[in-house]
Length: 67
Image (tube, rainbow, N blue to C red; front, side, top):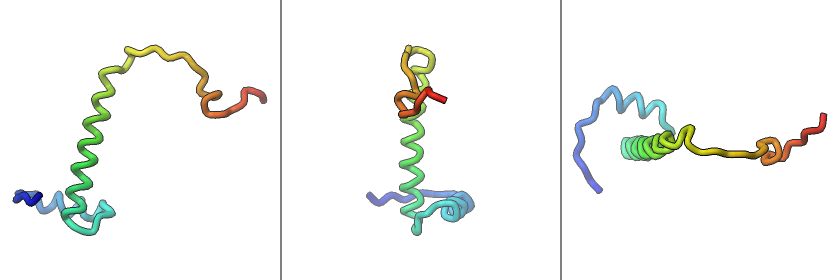
């Protein structure tokens, strides 16, 4: 989809240097995906401290309790 945007030149230049993307489109699409992912992850914070879990992380990770 084509869209006309007014983007801060310095912010875009900084993002272009930090991003593996080669084009402005690549960098902007990557930034939008990252923003959406971070927003979804924030949604998990509402569950913080509200769920009870019992288990052994060492066992799940395949670690032995033997010295």
